[in-house]
Image (cartoon, rainbow over all chains, first blue to last red; front, side, top):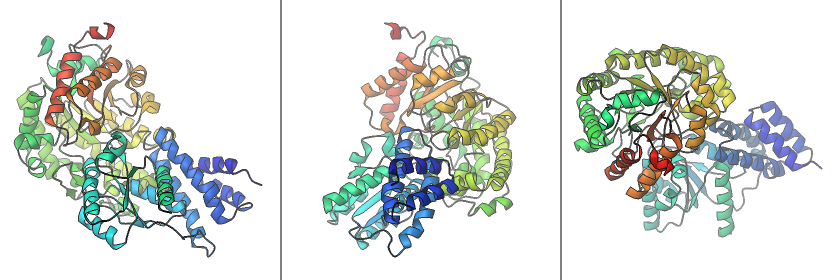
Length: 215
Length: 349
């Protein structure tokens, strides 16, 4: 039986080195012992979690985080599309967006990590007004809304999103992330968010915790 | 003029790694000028004269040690044809990238600095400011590094992919950007800027690992800075740089703008005698500082980086958010004037 810890080490190392060949070899090795779904749960998600934590500590750079997520998506997408692929049952309805401006790198990273962890998430894009975001969220009955921000004005506008969701009787959980929230640890509470994801893998932990509460 | 030094003398002394009369204060304010003039951010940046008036008012009000002639970061990509999106309460942002695909790099033409209206406006402001401050206050010009400009030219994700996956197109883009950066920086120095702040956040280890920096941003900075005919300060715009400080010192820059994510004492220890340190107040958190908090933060920063000179007190991003109230800025200034006076005897008390 393969040691998942060794596979996680190897995969995380290959991902931050952007070594696609090694990524393929590690996943092939994992495939000798695990099903595609188990590979995602036992190897890919933990490896991405380690990379996300490394980013928070300053040991891993953003370019490596972004490319890791992208490479994982390349390998995971075919698995997700398999008939026996990841179960979509009992998933919360999730969406992600960037308000007002067009800084979308954080959103892309979070999307890639979340999808590589086997979740579905709708990407509303960037440059959204508060009203458009509320319209989309209500229409799609979104349960978890993730908002990524690089600019302070966009981060502050989350408060308006929270207020309008409340006014509409919408119980959507709002998770925020991005530079302004990292530089001011009180900001996520100030804008009325339900949680702060300090990195993409922490966002996944929060999703799991919210799903636990709901279920 | 405390201790008889002008702001310029104060800054030059600290850049020489000696103690001037006081720690220089660089409040890097842009949009606050609009508030001073009681006009919108868009209107403020529409005329050189507005920025000149705003900067002069803020120089006096906050007893600042520099004039900051940056209008807004995307002004450079505006020069390349990009749309700039103004907002009522924040810095203008760049709209859709000018490079829609990496292939567009092949036909990319740099703008001619002296024929491009938005850049000419900045040069005009610098000329007017030079007349007003007559060599007593340094005027800081800004040039985005050739290595960091593509974030606005083609979007961050696309640029990371280019860097790793299409080295030929990356090199081609760097050649074009280097020529533009050198021309733009030198035009500002000719117009009246005393020094150029070379913004290079992509080189920070927050964005790329050191080995990638050594293959890319390091060499680009060395080549580019050597052709800029004046002193330069390299700014990481909140990004970490402790692991590459020794490398940054080799690029020929005089100052490094550092992040609040790293400890000023550690940074100062590495930079001592090689690079002056500028930073590292948290502009985002500054929004809600009390007078007492401002004083405590300034004292801590000065205690860590002030001794021996070679330190300029500033924010960690290179632009203070519009949401930071005037009262906080006044408190910061007051604390620097109180606790930044050399010799820093209070540290030994």
